[in-house]
Amino acid sequence: MNKTFTIYSFTLFLFLPLCTWANNLQIGDITLTRNNDGSQSAQISFSVDWENSWRVNSGQNNWDAVWLFVKFKNQDSDYWQHATLSNGSGHTADNGGQIDTSNDTGDGYAQGAFLYSSSTKTQGAADYEVSLRWEYGVDQQGEGDLFEINVYGIEMVYVPQGRYSLGTGGGENNTFYLRYNDGGSKDKPYVVSTEDAITVGTEYGNLHWDLIGPVPGDWNSGTIPAAFPKGYQSFYCMKYEVTQGQYADFLNTLTSDQVGENDYPVTVYNGTNRNGLRQIGDEFTSDHPYLPLFYSSHKLLFNYLDWACLRPMTEFEYEKACRGTEDPVAREFSWGTSLVSTDDYSITDNDLSSEYISANYSDTDVNASTGNSTIDENNDVVLGPTRVGIFATSTSNRIEAGASYYGIMDMTGNVWEMVITVSYEEGHSFDGSHGNGNLDNIGNYTISGWPNISASNPATGIRGGSFENTQDRAYISARGYIGEDFSTSSGRSFVGGRGVRTAPNN
Image (tube, rainbow, N blue to C red; front, side, top):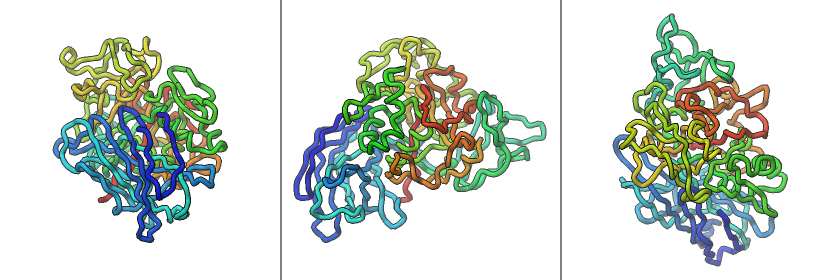
Protein backbone atom coordinates (compact mmCIF):
# COMPACT_ATOMS: atom_id res chain seq x y z
CA MET A 1 0.00 0.00 0.00
CA ASN A 2 3.02 2.33 0.28
CA LYS A 3 3.40 4.73 -2.62
CA THR A 4 6.31 6.84 -3.84
CA PHE A 5 5.50 10.10 -5.56
CA THR A 6 7.62 12.46 -7.61
CA ILE A 7 6.81 16.00 -8.65
CA TYR A 8 6.53 16.31 -12.41
CA SER A 9 5.23 18.61 -15.11
CA PHE A 10 3.09 18.08 -18.18
CA THR A 11 6.19 17.71 -20.35
CA LEU A 12 7.60 14.68 -18.53
CA PHE A 13 6.72 11.01 -18.40
CA LEU A 14 6.70 9.74 -14.83
CA PHE A 15 6.88 6.06 -13.94
CA LEU A 16 5.61 4.99 -10.53
CA PRO A 17 5.90 1.64 -8.78
CA LEU A 18 2.84 -0.56 -8.77
CA CYS A 19 0.21 0.23 -6.14
CA THR A 20 -1.31 -2.94 -4.66
CA TRP A 21 -4.88 -2.92 -3.30
CA ALA A 22 -7.10 -5.56 -1.74
CA ASN A 23 -7.16 -8.85 -3.66
CA ASN A 24 -4.46 -7.85 -6.13
CA LEU A 25 -5.88 -4.79 -7.83
CA GLN A 26 -2.78 -3.00 -9.12
CA ILE A 27 -2.35 0.43 -10.69
CA GLY A 28 1.05 1.43 -12.05
CA ASP A 29 3.19 3.01 -14.80
CA ILE A 30 1.47 6.38 -14.44
CA THR A 31 2.32 9.08 -16.98
CA LEU A 32 0.94 12.56 -17.61
CA THR A 33 0.88 14.20 -21.04
CA ARG A 34 -0.61 17.58 -21.92
CA ASN A 35 -3.10 17.79 -24.81
CA ASN A 36 -1.68 20.40 -27.21
CA ASP A 37 -5.03 21.64 -28.45
CA GLY A 38 -5.58 24.66 -26.21
CA SER A 39 -8.16 22.76 -24.12
CA GLN A 40 -6.25 22.98 -20.81
CA SER A 41 -6.49 19.22 -20.45
CA ALA A 42 -4.06 16.33 -20.06
CA GLN A 43 -4.04 12.56 -20.41
CA ILE A 44 -3.31 10.54 -17.28
CA SER A 45 -2.23 7.10 -18.49
CA PHE A 46 -1.59 4.00 -16.39
CA SER A 47 -1.94 0.23 -16.22
CA VAL A 48 -4.71 -1.53 -14.29
CA ASP A 49 -4.91 -5.23 -13.55
CA TRP A 50 -6.77 -7.43 -11.11
CA GLU A 51 -7.78 -11.04 -10.58
CA ASN A 52 -11.11 -12.90 -10.81
CA SER A 53 -12.76 -10.42 -13.16
CA TRP A 54 -15.89 -11.48 -15.07
CA ARG A 55 -18.84 -10.45 -17.22
CA VAL A 56 -21.95 -12.57 -17.82
CA ASN A 57 -24.86 -11.59 -20.09
CA SER A 58 -27.38 -14.10 -18.72
CA GLY A 59 -28.51 -15.14 -15.25
CA GLN A 60 -27.15 -12.40 -13.01
CA ASN A 61 -26.37 -10.34 -16.15
CA ASN A 62 -23.60 -8.42 -14.45
CA TRP A 63 -19.88 -7.77 -14.22
CA ASP A 64 -17.19 -6.53 -11.93
CA ALA A 65 -15.47 -3.20 -12.49
CA VAL A 66 -12.93 -0.80 -11.03
CA TRP A 67 -13.95 2.69 -9.95
CA LEU A 68 -11.06 5.01 -10.86
CA PHE A 69 -10.50 8.52 -9.51
CA VAL A 70 -7.58 10.92 -9.30
CA LYS A 71 -6.15 13.28 -6.68
CA PHE A 72 -3.48 15.90 -7.42
CA LYS A 73 -1.27 18.28 -5.46
CA ASN A 74 0.15 21.43 -7.02
CA GLN A 75 3.82 21.99 -6.15
CA ASP A 76 2.88 25.45 -4.90
CA SER A 77 0.29 24.13 -2.41
CA ASP A 78 0.43 21.78 0.56
CA TYR A 79 -2.89 19.96 0.10
CA TRP A 80 -4.46 17.39 -2.20
CA GLN A 81 -7.37 18.18 -4.52
CA HIS A 82 -9.79 16.05 -6.52
CA ALA A 83 -9.22 15.94 -10.29
CA THR A 84 -12.12 16.74 -12.62
CA LEU A 85 -12.40 14.43 -15.64
CA SER A 86 -14.21 14.85 -18.94
CA ASN A 87 -17.58 13.16 -19.27
CA GLY A 88 -17.93 10.65 -22.09
CA SER A 89 -15.00 11.58 -24.33
CA GLY A 90 -11.22 11.57 -24.07
CA HIS A 91 -10.92 8.27 -22.16
CA THR A 92 -9.51 5.03 -23.60
CA ALA A 93 -8.83 1.45 -22.50
CA ASP A 94 -7.21 -1.30 -24.56
CA ASN A 95 -7.79 -5.06 -24.53
CA GLY A 96 -11.59 -4.80 -24.69
CA GLY A 97 -11.96 -2.47 -21.74
CA GLN A 98 -14.94 -0.13 -21.47
CA ILE A 99 -14.98 3.19 -19.60
CA ASP A 100 -18.19 4.81 -18.34
CA THR A 101 -18.55 8.24 -16.74
CA SER A 102 -21.41 10.43 -15.51
CA ASN A 103 -22.19 14.15 -15.60
CA ASP A 104 -21.32 14.41 -11.92
CA THR A 105 -20.84 18.17 -11.74
CA GLY A 106 -24.05 19.05 -13.58
CA ASP A 107 -22.13 21.01 -16.20
CA GLY A 108 -20.56 18.23 -18.22
CA TYR A 109 -17.71 16.85 -16.12
CA ALA A 110 -17.04 13.60 -14.27
CA GLN A 111 -15.42 12.88 -10.91
CA GLY A 112 -14.27 9.36 -11.74
CA ALA A 113 -14.74 6.52 -14.22
CA PHE A 114 -15.78 2.86 -14.24
CA LEU A 115 -13.53 0.38 -16.06
CA TYR A 116 -14.83 -3.09 -17.02
CA SER A 117 -14.92 -5.63 -19.83
CA SER A 118 -16.99 -4.58 -22.85
CA SER A 119 -17.92 -8.19 -23.67
CA THR A 120 -18.60 -11.52 -22.01
CA LYS A 121 -15.62 -12.62 -19.93
CA THR A 122 -14.95 -15.91 -18.15
CA GLN A 123 -13.70 -15.31 -14.62
CA GLY A 124 -9.97 -14.61 -14.72
CA ALA A 125 -7.31 -11.91 -14.81
CA ALA A 126 -8.04 -8.46 -16.25
CA ASP A 127 -5.26 -6.28 -17.66
CA TYR A 128 -5.80 -2.86 -19.25
CA GLU A 129 -3.82 0.18 -20.35
CA VAL A 130 -6.01 3.18 -19.50
CA SER A 131 -5.93 6.88 -20.32
CA LEU A 132 -8.21 9.39 -18.59
CA ARG A 133 -8.66 12.99 -19.71
CA TRP A 134 -8.05 15.43 -16.84
CA GLU A 135 -9.65 18.86 -17.28
CA TYR A 136 -7.01 20.72 -15.28
CA GLY A 137 -8.29 24.10 -16.45
CA VAL A 138 -11.64 23.39 -14.79
CA ASP A 139 -9.66 22.72 -11.60
CA GLN A 140 -8.08 26.19 -11.89
CA GLN A 141 -4.60 24.87 -12.68
CA GLY A 142 -2.17 26.40 -15.17
CA GLU A 143 -0.20 24.91 -18.06
CA GLY A 144 3.16 25.54 -16.40
CA ASP A 145 2.23 24.11 -13.01
CA LEU A 146 3.98 21.11 -11.45
CA PHE A 147 2.03 18.31 -9.77
CA GLU A 148 1.98 15.09 -7.85
CA ILE A 149 -0.69 12.67 -9.09
CA ASN A 150 -2.38 9.77 -7.28
CA VAL A 151 -4.64 7.35 -9.17
CA TYR A 152 -6.96 5.27 -6.97
CA GLY A 153 -9.01 2.20 -7.81
CA ILE A 154 -11.79 0.41 -5.93
CA GLU A 155 -13.22 -2.94 -7.06
CA MET A 156 -16.97 -2.75 -7.66
CA VAL A 157 -19.78 -5.07 -8.78
CA TYR A 158 -22.64 -4.07 -11.08
CA VAL A 159 -26.14 -4.75 -9.70
CA PRO A 160 -28.59 -4.50 -12.64
CA GLN A 161 -32.02 -2.90 -12.60
CA GLY A 162 -34.79 -5.25 -11.58
CA ARG A 163 -37.48 -6.20 -9.10
CA TYR A 164 -36.57 -8.01 -5.91
CA SER A 165 -37.96 -8.93 -2.48
CA LEU A 166 -37.60 -7.30 0.93
CA GLY A 167 -37.91 -9.82 3.76
CA THR A 168 -38.41 -13.57 3.53
CA GLY A 169 -41.53 -14.33 5.55
CA GLY A 170 -39.24 -16.28 7.86
CA GLY A 171 -39.68 -14.21 11.00
CA GLU A 172 -36.24 -12.59 11.22
CA ASN A 173 -35.92 -9.88 13.86
CA ASN A 174 -37.77 -6.68 12.77
CA THR A 175 -37.95 -7.94 9.18
CA PHE A 176 -39.75 -6.22 6.31
CA TYR A 177 -42.99 -7.85 5.16
CA LEU A 178 -46.07 -7.28 2.99
CA ARG A 179 -49.18 -6.21 4.89
CA TYR A 180 -51.90 -8.20 3.16
CA ASN A 181 -54.63 -8.92 5.74
CA ASP A 182 -56.17 -7.44 8.88
CA GLY A 183 -54.44 -9.99 11.09
CA GLY A 184 -51.05 -8.67 10.17
CA SER A 185 -49.57 -11.93 8.88
CA LYS A 186 -45.84 -11.59 8.26
CA ASP A 187 -45.20 -14.55 5.98
CA LYS A 188 -44.97 -12.72 2.64
CA PRO A 189 -42.06 -10.58 1.45
CA TYR A 190 -42.62 -7.14 -0.04
CA VAL A 191 -41.71 -6.90 -3.74
CA VAL A 192 -39.96 -3.74 -4.95
CA SER A 193 -40.63 -3.18 -8.66
CA THR A 194 -40.02 0.56 -9.10
CA GLU A 195 -38.17 3.52 -7.61
CA ASP A 196 -41.50 5.24 -6.86
CA ALA A 197 -42.47 6.31 -3.34
CA ILE A 198 -43.41 3.45 -0.98
CA THR A 199 -46.28 3.59 1.50
CA VAL A 200 -45.48 2.11 4.91
CA GLY A 201 -48.35 1.20 7.21
CA THR A 202 -50.98 -1.37 8.13
CA GLU A 203 -53.25 -1.14 5.07
CA TYR A 204 -53.50 -3.88 2.46
CA GLY A 205 -50.47 -3.83 0.13
CA ASN A 206 -48.31 -1.65 2.40
CA LEU A 207 -44.72 -2.34 3.34
CA HIS A 208 -44.45 -2.86 7.11
CA TRP A 209 -42.17 -3.89 9.98
CA ASP A 210 -42.81 -4.12 13.71
CA LEU A 211 -40.09 -2.12 15.52
CA ILE A 212 -39.07 -5.25 17.42
CA GLY A 213 -35.44 -5.84 18.36
CA PRO A 214 -32.60 -4.53 20.50
CA VAL A 215 -32.45 -1.23 18.54
CA PRO A 216 -35.32 -1.21 16.00
CA GLY A 217 -35.68 2.52 15.28
CA ASP A 218 -38.85 4.52 15.84
CA TRP A 219 -40.67 4.96 12.48
CA ASN A 220 -42.91 2.56 10.54
CA SER A 221 -45.84 4.58 9.19
CA GLY A 222 -45.90 7.08 6.33
CA THR A 223 -44.19 7.47 2.96
CA ILE A 224 -40.64 6.74 1.84
CA PRO A 225 -39.93 9.35 -0.86
CA ALA A 226 -39.28 8.51 -4.51
CA ALA A 227 -35.79 10.05 -4.28
CA PHE A 228 -34.69 7.54 -1.62
CA PRO A 229 -32.68 4.79 -3.42
CA LYS A 230 -34.70 1.58 -3.27
CA GLY A 231 -32.44 -0.83 -5.11
CA TYR A 232 -34.62 -1.26 -8.20
CA GLN A 233 -32.44 1.03 -10.30
CA SER A 234 -29.03 -0.31 -11.33
CA PHE A 235 -26.06 0.56 -9.13
CA TYR A 236 -22.50 -0.46 -8.41
CA CYS A 237 -21.55 -1.84 -4.99
CA MET A 238 -18.03 -2.18 -3.59
CA LYS A 239 -16.94 -5.79 -4.01
CA TYR A 240 -15.33 -5.72 -0.55
CA GLU A 241 -15.68 -3.71 2.62
CA VAL A 242 -13.51 -0.60 2.92
CA THR A 243 -10.09 -1.89 3.97
CA GLN A 244 -7.62 -0.50 6.46
CA GLY A 245 -5.17 0.09 3.61
CA GLN A 246 -7.72 2.15 1.70
CA TYR A 247 -8.52 4.16 4.79
CA ALA A 248 -4.81 4.87 5.38
CA ASP A 249 -4.55 6.16 1.80
CA PHE A 250 -7.52 8.43 2.50
CA LEU A 251 -5.91 9.84 5.65
CA ASN A 252 -2.66 10.49 3.78
CA THR A 253 -4.36 13.01 1.48
CA LEU A 254 -5.96 15.08 4.27
CA THR A 255 -4.73 18.22 5.99
CA SER A 256 -3.83 18.04 9.69
CA ASP A 257 -7.18 19.61 10.62
CA GLN A 258 -9.06 17.09 8.47
CA VAL A 259 -7.07 14.17 9.90
CA GLY A 260 -8.13 15.14 13.42
CA GLU A 261 -11.76 14.52 12.48
CA ASN A 262 -11.06 11.10 10.93
CA ASP A 263 -8.25 9.33 12.80
CA TYR A 264 -10.28 7.74 15.61
CA PRO A 265 -9.44 4.13 14.61
CA VAL A 266 -5.74 5.07 14.60
CA THR A 267 -5.45 6.96 17.87
CA VAL A 268 -7.83 4.99 20.10
CA TYR A 269 -7.90 1.34 19.06
CA ASN A 270 -4.61 0.59 17.32
CA GLY A 271 -3.68 -3.07 17.85
CA THR A 272 -7.11 -4.16 19.13
CA ASN A 273 -8.95 -7.04 17.41
CA ARG A 274 -6.51 -6.90 14.45
CA ASN A 275 -6.90 -3.17 13.92
CA GLY A 276 -3.51 -2.28 12.41
CA LEU A 277 -4.03 1.38 11.51
CA ARG A 278 -1.21 3.56 12.84
CA GLN A 279 0.76 6.72 12.16
CA ILE A 280 4.52 6.79 11.53
CA GLY A 281 5.74 10.36 11.33
CA ASP A 282 3.45 12.10 8.86
CA GLU A 283 2.35 8.89 7.14
CA PHE A 284 -0.59 6.64 7.96
CA THR A 285 -0.31 2.94 7.31
CA SER A 286 -1.77 -0.37 8.47
CA ASP A 287 -0.16 -3.59 9.60
CA HIS A 288 -3.30 -5.31 8.26
CA PRO A 289 -4.02 -3.43 4.97
CA TYR A 290 -6.24 -6.18 3.56
CA LEU A 291 -8.49 -6.41 6.61
CA PRO A 292 -11.66 -4.33 6.73
CA LEU A 293 -11.84 -0.95 8.39
CA PHE A 294 -13.67 -1.20 11.70
CA TYR A 295 -14.10 0.91 14.83
CA SER A 296 -16.08 3.04 12.41
CA SER A 297 -18.91 5.55 12.78
CA HIS A 298 -21.26 7.10 10.24
CA LYS A 299 -19.02 10.16 10.07
CA LEU A 300 -15.83 8.23 9.32
CA LEU A 301 -17.48 6.07 6.66
CA PHE A 302 -19.39 8.92 5.02
CA ASN A 303 -16.27 11.10 4.92
CA TYR A 304 -14.35 8.33 3.16
CA LEU A 305 -17.19 7.82 0.66
CA ASP A 306 -17.41 11.54 -0.08
CA TRP A 307 -13.65 11.62 -0.70
CA ALA A 308 -13.94 8.60 -3.05
CA CYS A 309 -16.99 10.03 -4.91
CA LEU A 310 -19.20 7.14 -3.82
CA ARG A 311 -22.26 7.24 -1.55
CA PRO A 312 -23.74 5.31 1.38
CA MET A 313 -25.82 2.22 0.71
CA THR A 314 -29.47 2.09 1.78
CA GLU A 315 -30.83 -0.93 3.61
CA PHE A 316 -33.06 -1.66 0.60
CA GLU A 317 -29.98 -1.79 -1.64
CA TYR A 318 -28.31 -4.08 0.89
CA GLU A 319 -31.06 -6.71 0.49
CA LYS A 320 -31.05 -6.34 -3.31
CA ALA A 321 -27.25 -6.71 -3.49
CA CYS A 322 -27.42 -9.87 -1.34
CA ARG A 323 -30.50 -11.68 -2.64
CA GLY A 324 -30.77 -10.38 -6.17
CA THR A 325 -33.87 -11.44 -8.05
CA GLU A 326 -34.08 -14.88 -6.43
CA ASP A 327 -37.03 -15.98 -4.31
CA PRO A 328 -36.34 -15.36 -0.62
CA VAL A 329 -35.31 -18.19 1.70
CA ALA A 330 -36.25 -18.01 5.38
CA ARG A 331 -33.30 -16.97 7.55
CA GLU A 332 -30.95 -16.97 4.58
CA PHE A 333 -27.44 -15.59 4.47
CA SER A 334 -25.94 -13.70 1.55
CA TRP A 335 -25.05 -16.92 -0.31
CA GLY A 336 -28.71 -17.97 -0.44
CA THR A 337 -28.96 -20.75 2.18
CA SER A 338 -29.71 -20.79 5.90
CA LEU A 339 -26.58 -22.71 6.97
CA VAL A 340 -23.18 -21.27 8.00
CA SER A 341 -19.98 -22.91 9.22
CA THR A 342 -19.65 -22.79 13.02
CA ASP A 343 -16.28 -24.56 13.43
CA ASP A 344 -13.42 -22.27 14.45
CA TYR A 345 -11.35 -21.11 11.49
CA SER A 346 -7.57 -20.90 11.52
CA ILE A 347 -5.68 -18.62 9.14
CA THR A 348 -2.28 -18.73 7.44
CA ASP A 349 -0.28 -15.88 5.85
CA ASN A 350 -1.63 -13.48 8.44
CA ASP A 351 -1.89 -9.85 7.27
CA LEU A 352 -0.82 -10.60 3.69
CA SER A 353 -2.91 -10.33 0.53
CA SER A 354 -2.69 -14.14 0.44
CA GLU A 355 -4.16 -14.67 3.95
CA TYR A 356 -6.33 -17.78 3.74
CA ILE A 357 -8.41 -20.19 5.82
CA SER A 358 -6.18 -23.14 6.72
CA ALA A 359 -8.60 -25.06 8.96
CA ASN A 360 -12.37 -25.71 8.89
CA TYR A 361 -13.14 -24.10 5.51
CA SER A 362 -16.59 -25.42 4.60
CA ASP A 363 -16.52 -27.40 1.35
CA THR A 364 -19.85 -28.00 -0.40
CA ASP A 365 -18.66 -31.47 -1.44
CA VAL A 366 -19.04 -32.28 2.26
CA ASN A 367 -21.64 -29.76 3.42
CA ALA A 368 -23.68 -28.92 0.34
CA SER A 369 -25.56 -25.91 1.77
CA THR A 370 -23.14 -24.61 4.42
CA GLY A 371 -21.52 -21.30 3.58
CA ASN A 372 -18.42 -19.57 4.95
CA SER A 373 -18.47 -16.32 6.89
CA THR A 374 -16.57 -14.77 9.81
CA ILE A 375 -19.05 -14.71 12.73
CA ASP A 376 -18.86 -15.19 16.49
CA GLU A 377 -19.40 -18.96 16.42
CA ASN A 378 -16.21 -19.59 14.37
CA ASN A 379 -13.98 -16.76 15.65
CA ASP A 380 -12.45 -18.11 18.87
CA VAL A 381 -9.05 -18.60 17.18
CA VAL A 382 -8.84 -15.59 14.85
CA LEU A 383 -10.40 -13.16 17.37
CA GLY A 384 -11.19 -10.46 14.85
CA PRO A 385 -12.12 -9.88 11.21
CA THR A 386 -10.44 -11.72 8.35
CA ARG A 387 -9.03 -10.53 5.03
CA VAL A 388 -11.76 -9.14 2.80
CA GLY A 389 -12.86 -11.79 0.31
CA ILE A 390 -10.89 -14.50 2.13
CA PHE A 391 -13.35 -17.30 1.33
CA ALA A 392 -13.23 -16.82 -2.46
CA THR A 393 -10.74 -18.98 -4.35
CA SER A 394 -10.16 -19.75 -8.01
CA THR A 395 -12.37 -22.85 -7.64
CA SER A 396 -14.94 -21.84 -5.01
CA ASN A 397 -18.64 -21.62 -5.76
CA ARG A 398 -21.04 -19.01 -4.37
CA ILE A 399 -21.77 -20.90 -1.14
CA GLU A 400 -18.13 -21.70 -0.38
CA ALA A 401 -17.07 -18.13 -1.15
CA GLY A 402 -19.83 -16.67 1.01
CA ALA A 403 -20.73 -14.48 -1.96
CA SER A 404 -23.95 -12.65 -2.73
CA TYR A 405 -26.11 -13.40 -5.77
CA TYR A 406 -24.10 -10.87 -7.79
CA GLY A 407 -20.64 -11.87 -6.52
CA ILE A 408 -20.25 -9.29 -3.73
CA MET A 409 -18.12 -10.52 -0.84
CA ASP A 410 -18.61 -10.51 2.95
CA MET A 411 -22.15 -9.13 2.98
CA THR A 412 -22.69 -11.63 5.79
CA GLY A 413 -20.31 -11.39 8.74
CA ASN A 414 -16.76 -10.02 9.10
CA VAL A 415 -17.87 -6.47 10.01
CA TRP A 416 -21.36 -4.94 10.08
CA GLU A 417 -22.48 -3.03 6.98
CA MET A 418 -23.51 0.52 7.83
CA VAL A 419 -26.59 1.57 5.84
CA ILE A 420 -29.10 4.39 5.58
CA THR A 421 -32.18 3.14 7.42
CA VAL A 422 -35.86 3.76 6.77
CA SER A 423 -36.64 3.23 10.47
CA TYR A 424 -35.72 6.83 11.28
CA GLU A 425 -37.38 9.68 9.42
CA GLU A 426 -34.09 11.54 8.93
CA GLY A 427 -32.95 8.64 6.75
CA HIS A 428 -35.68 9.49 4.25
CA SER A 429 -33.87 12.74 3.41
CA PHE A 430 -31.16 10.76 1.63
CA ASP A 431 -31.51 11.31 -2.12
CA GLY A 432 -28.68 9.15 -3.48
CA SER A 433 -26.31 12.01 -4.33
CA HIS A 434 -22.73 10.95 -4.88
CA GLY A 435 -19.72 12.29 -3.03
CA ASN A 436 -17.80 15.01 -4.85
CA GLY A 437 -14.27 14.23 -3.70
CA ASN A 438 -14.03 17.25 -1.39
CA LEU A 439 -14.37 17.47 2.39
CA ASP A 440 -14.82 20.69 4.34
CA ASN A 441 -11.90 22.35 6.13
CA ILE A 442 -12.22 20.15 9.23
CA GLY A 443 -12.69 16.90 7.29
CA ASN A 444 -16.44 16.29 7.12
CA TYR A 445 -18.61 15.37 4.15
CA THR A 446 -20.27 18.22 2.27
CA ILE A 447 -23.14 16.59 0.37
CA SER A 448 -26.50 18.28 1.01
CA GLY A 449 -28.49 15.21 -0.08
CA TRP A 450 -27.01 13.09 2.72
CA PRO A 451 -28.70 12.97 6.14
CA ASN A 452 -27.76 15.54 8.77
CA ILE A 453 -27.15 13.01 11.53
CA SER A 454 -26.99 13.72 15.25
CA ALA A 455 -27.70 11.83 18.47
CA SER A 456 -31.24 13.22 18.45
CA ASN A 457 -31.63 12.76 14.69
CA PRO A 458 -30.17 9.35 13.68
CA ALA A 459 -30.41 7.96 10.16
CA THR A 460 -28.11 4.95 9.98
CA GLY A 461 -28.17 1.37 11.17
CA ILE A 462 -26.26 -1.85 10.59
CA ARG A 463 -27.00 -5.04 8.66
CA GLY A 464 -25.31 -8.38 8.09
CA GLY A 465 -23.62 -9.26 11.38
CA SER A 466 -19.93 -9.36 12.29
CA PHE A 467 -17.13 -11.39 13.84
CA GLU A 468 -18.51 -10.45 17.29
CA ASN A 469 -22.13 -11.47 16.64
CA THR A 470 -24.01 -14.76 16.47
CA GLN A 471 -25.49 -16.03 13.23
CA ASP A 472 -29.05 -14.89 13.94
CA ARG A 473 -27.82 -11.28 13.59
CA ALA A 474 -26.32 -12.06 10.18
CA TYR A 475 -29.43 -13.08 8.23
CA ILE A 476 -29.99 -10.92 5.14
CA SER A 477 -33.37 -9.72 6.43
CA ALA A 478 -32.56 -9.38 10.15
CA ARG A 479 -33.00 -5.74 11.22
CA GLY A 480 -32.66 -5.88 15.00
CA TYR A 481 -29.90 -3.24 15.03
CA ILE A 482 -31.20 -1.04 12.24
CA GLY A 483 -31.73 1.80 14.72
CA GLU A 484 -28.24 1.70 16.27
CA ASP A 485 -26.91 5.25 16.81
CA PHE A 486 -23.60 6.07 15.11
CA SER A 487 -23.85 9.84 15.35
CA THR A 488 -20.49 10.43 17.05
CA SER A 489 -16.92 9.92 15.88
CA SER A 490 -16.49 7.15 18.46
CA GLY A 491 -16.45 4.01 16.35
CA ARG A 492 -17.64 0.52 17.26
CA SER A 493 -15.31 -2.46 17.18
CA PHE A 494 -17.59 -4.50 14.94
CA VAL A 495 -18.74 -1.84 12.44
CA GLY A 496 -17.31 -1.12 8.99
CA GLY A 497 -19.05 -0.64 5.69
CA ARG A 498 -18.76 -0.06 1.98
CA GLY A 499 -20.00 2.38 -0.63
CA VAL A 500 -22.17 2.22 -3.72
CA ARG A 501 -22.73 4.43 -6.75
CA THR A 502 -25.75 4.74 -9.02
CA ALA A 503 -24.83 3.32 -12.44
CA PRO A 504 -24.23 5.81 -15.29
CA ASN A 505 -26.99 6.16 -17.87
CA ASN A 506 -24.79 5.35 -20.85
